[in-house]
Length: 234
Length: 234
DNA sequence: CGGCTGATTGAAATGCATCAAACAAAGTGG
DNA sequence: CCACTTTGTTTGATGCATTTCAATCAGCCG
Image 1 (tube, each protein chain N blue to C red):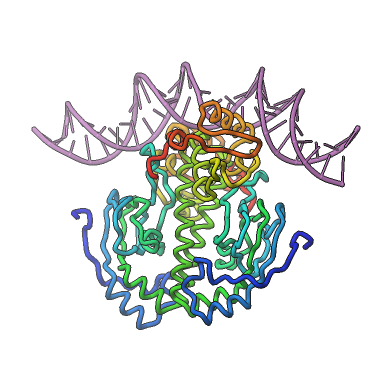
Image 2: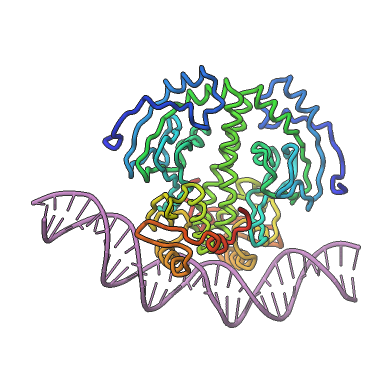
């Protein structure tokens, strides 16, 4: 476990939105039953097929969650960041993990045991409802992504993914996307070939929609990108 | 509401697996608070954007759940049958419906008010857990579908969809798929053009994987179809 | 019978994947 | 600290699966 570089047990989860509904009592036991660890970029938190002992709450850093297709190709399902929880789906279903999760930006995660989760669900109906709403929100996004991936061209999809990343990870003062992905990771999100991503990105750059410097992506024409993405909402 | 042809309030929901965890007391109030109605093929149960007052449990019949893409094309998310519940996702999130659901085989549905659902979640933690597991199961399938749709060829996908339909709706003694879809509906499930479905189906027929008689699809070579679908599991 | 929806086939156009090669960057070990 | 290996990026050329457009046909209903 050389990739877990420090053990930090003085984290308090009470501030995270996910645990808003807990009583003081519950907060106490949650904070004593959790285990926080820091993870280096590249570390795998859990693998497809492994048994899970709990779920994780992300204190900081970014995690990519992906499935391995039948041809071994990775399909990125989502990126999780501060405040998000991961691994809860398979845990609740009491199945082996059906995704792999990998740190893509140095992270601090809290592990919360299954028993603690079950206890909260049993004792605190507000928590259950909050939990239900989280799963429902993720299901909604999954359904929307199915629709997009099934109907849109790679060009539209890439533009949309850039916009989604912007929503989730924001831009800095120079409009640079605050998540750094390889071209291959972008390809594995969109479900296309790395070369296609490269070509489309440089087309977007030529069209003055974005600017590129290595892995840094600046979004310089939001409206234009939205148009390319063929999005009606927002 | 001319498409609701009868009102049947003598249905007892206690037998359905979804309500297994309810106490006798809860069964009673559930059965008194629900409203059952019969729907003709073609009827829309609820539309994208509409406000929901409750969710539905399917007593019999088949319902297709779809989203409308930005170009107006319908993307079928799933087919629901006896014992399944629909509309619960948007209801729990307290949002307008983000899918449309349409009867594709004459159906009998029970409407269960939001209040009743909330009450069950509040009072019965076993029910909450069961509910959570249902949403998690649907999320799992959605994630798997994302991976397939993003990575597989239309040919592989169609084979897989036929197999999924077989799992969910079975075959009769003559190996005929017990769900009848138009070519367009198949196309809207796979996310492709109707013409592609037609061509691929007749290729499958030529390869003696399936047999076609109008909308009836017979699966005569399960192993072969599985191979075409490029599936490792099962 | 005409009108409508769904199914089918053909031909042409194209978006995207694949393969190949070269290059850049970054980390490793002597 | 430099050669080496590895990993990621880029560009070009080619092929193919799938879309699109067009036309015809079959079945069904009022």
